[in-house]
Image 1 (cartoon, rainbow, N blue to C red):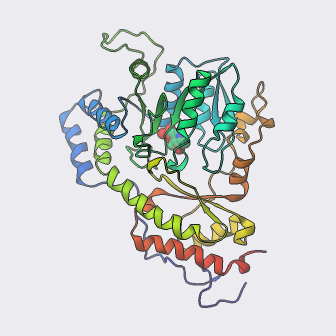
Image 2: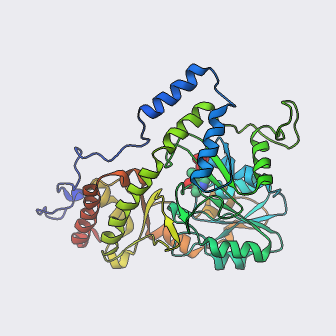
Image 3: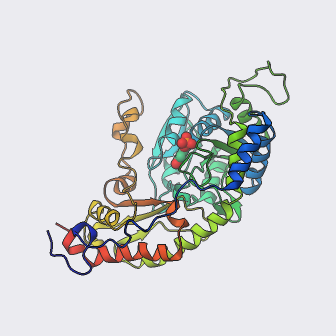
Amino acid sequence: MPKTTKNALAIHGGTPVRGADKKWPGWPQFDDTERKALNEVLESGKWFFGDRVTQFEREYADYQDARFCVTCNSGTAAAEIAMQALGIGPGDEVLVPAYTFIATASSVARVGATPIFVDIDDSWCMDPALAEAAITPRTKAIMPVHFGSQVCDMDRFNALAQKHNLKIIEDACHSWGSKWKGKGTGALGFGGVFSFQASKNITAGEGGAILTDNEEFADACKSITNCGRAKGSVWYGHVLLGTNARITEFAAALLSAQLSRLQEHTLRRQRNAAILNKELGAIEGLIPQPGDSRMTQRAYHLYCMRMDDKAFGCSREQMVEAARAEGLPIGPGYAVPLYKQPVFAERKGTPDYTKCHCPATEDLCYRTGTWFGHPNLLGSEEDMYDIVAIFKKIKENVSLLAK
Ligand SMILES: *Cc1c(COP(=O)(O)O)cnc(C)c1O
């Protein structure tokens, strides 16, 4: 073991930058707003299909600058319902990134269509040029992900939609509050899907929503979440093949309460991330996920960085392990591209997913990607300088880490 110096790394027996006495902000956050809202639903005896769902749908649509919001019970359900409402099915292809959560691709497969994996660019989002190259006569939609809240180049994706007669459904499950040229994510394309699962920036434990400016699409999504009932139809009138994906009044009440602090939280994360972008970006070998001047607000679901092992001086795994020992709960991100998951890789038929190769995605998975979650960004300015100190300390001692 290397000799313990004054500034020794915690993994070498030194004192961590953040000891056990220094706590990061917890998640989820709540106070009497949530308590009161939940208790009101409880006491009202009206636990489903009521005004609170309608109220949250209005509030959330307004917050994201969309005309319509349809809530449902998960982001995964939202993506599947959006695909079904567009009439996407067997024989159709939908372009998705390979660096994302499973639901982006599984939602396409679950309606019988084929997810086609497209690589990302330096933004960690789907590369629009590669997307265009992947379009075939069978392509019906593109589902880019606003990864880590970084908004995809929606100007180019919308231009592709126009040119090739496709629908853009944003996977906005990282981007409550992100804005592109002043408009919220979710209805920048034809529609967008959101998650309110426990780890997300507003949460009811589970939950989801679909946003759109298109009334017909909103009505179809609503009908599918509600057992296929048509708008204004009788209880026993079923016009579409739906499911029950409704949220409860408890969930809606929680979400309205959570939404009441989302903007303040978003601004705080943005301020703190700006410190990290400047300070960490100045460390050789660390490349924070870049912004885009057209993104007028950024949610920061994750704080993402690429680490160039050669320029930084050790492997990503060594850096992540050292940073964790110093008190930062950081991880290496997704371990494999989605097409390596057995559900795709072992699937017989066309396409043969074992032939997929997305080099930028593989580089993030296997060598350079790291991130930590949004709760850390709710800390103080001093907390941010602790994060900076952690990476400076690792960099100073990097020769003792590299083998
Ligand atoms: C969280 C998430 C979803 C959906 O998540 P649920 O847990 O089903 O609500 C979809 N896409 C991405 C990129 C996500 O991170």
